[in-house]
Amino acid sequence: MFKTVVKNSPNHSDRGGVTVDTIMVHSTGGSLRGSLEWLCNPNSKVSAHYLIARDGTVYKLVPTGRAAWHAGKCRVPDANRRSIGIEMEQLYGDEWTEAQRETLLRLIAVLKRAVPSIKYLVGHREWNSSKIDPYRMDMDELRKQTGLEKL
Image (cartoon, rainbow, N blue to C red; front, top):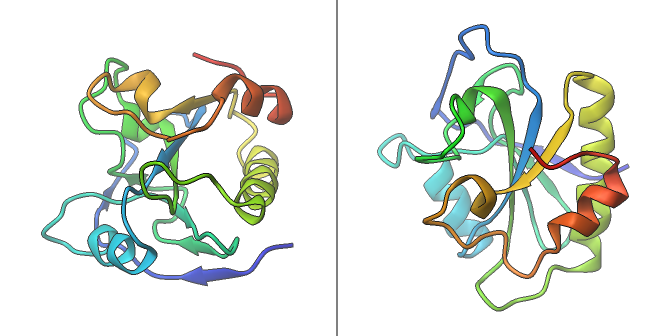
């Protein structure tokens, strides 16, 4: 299906009984190596559940049963607790690779089967007005391809 590498981030917490209903897509804004170091650094206090590299490799950083710290200050309450965060390795201005697109669609399909309460797909910028990621991604088209909705 896709190559998965497990790297454990210490930056996560309990979901506090909040139901997971959303997948949030991000762009790293940095290199794979730098992004993995940052997302797994306890001093950064940020993480995501997954990071998809440009070659399509999936890095699993936080168990989906835990809340990763990826959303920041969002207009939506309990953003981290209710969502699964997927980072895409991407510098500002770069296009996503075909391997990333295919892997993202497969990963979303796997997550929908594993977590049937997932109904929504959002880009980071849609919940956090201070963010501009994911870069160069038509979220409406991605929602159409995955059968998920905008919250």
